[in-house]
Image (cartoon, rainbow, N blue to C red; front, top):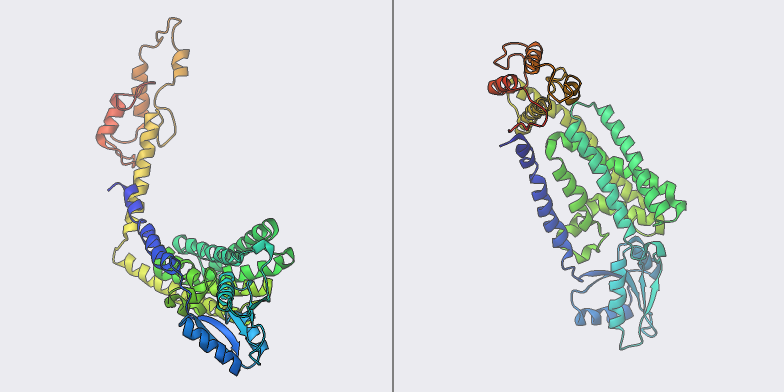
Length: 433
């Protein structure tokens, strides 16, 4: 195959992987979200038990009621995101029940709880909805945190991915320096656009959001940099899988965990998408998990990144030494070498086609202007030995045997060189003529 086709062919694994992961992660998780086992907090009381038993009888498996000792604890679970809502039933069993939601934490979850309980209590005295933390008008559907999280993930893994693919000889300190610089630059860029230009969040949070973005982008980059020693040019696969395809549906940012297949809900505590989204919501809206949980997750990824970086570099160097001593090579190295040689050949042929010596850059024949200067008024050439001059010029510029390619080292064939000498190009004549 031509070298260019070899290079293209060895990269086609990426679109195949992308399509497969997209279908098995995004489409599988989001094509048909189900409302089942919705976590709802209730205060433990006889009146509450009577209501929940009736709901479970009429709508089995729809809710997963979690009992708390007092109303404050139940409401706090909604604020933290542990539950999608809280059902507060008067202890006497009389009066209007209250449903507590927080759209700022999970817009879809809050809407599901609100609409569900409005239908359940539609024939009775009705239900009062208490939205304790509403979303601002600048992020009315709660998608801002999700896409900010995604941009941080992509920024972090892409910087490290290119370091892993192209920066093999770099030292640890150089790599860390590039990761640090990239994290600062990308965090500033992301927050200037989202915070200052688009106004997704209030400008008073710009400094804190930028600092948080720097930490997460650097951590993700550190992790990908470490594992890149083991995956080489295929690092884009695991990086995309961990920080995009699995992280997005498992984060709970697009849909709550109980609306997607259980596989993703089990992954939720371990994916960076969940940690980033919860920290953003805690910072901007005062909802979500406490900060320490996000920092613990961040530290875990950073530690793995450092360990794999130390071990991976030694492992990679040992593999390289073994390859060199045994005269081994790789398909990519062979293709790159062939591509370089092919490029040099095309370069030489292009220069020769335009009458330029590939080595010296000198012209191999006189230009139209030179010929016009030496012609008579009627257009005939004053020097009838122009062709002989061209051949002489070729003889002086070519090193080695005139009938071969000796000393040229450009990969041109013997026949091509002989043809160039015996048939010097003239203006207006195509090389295939």
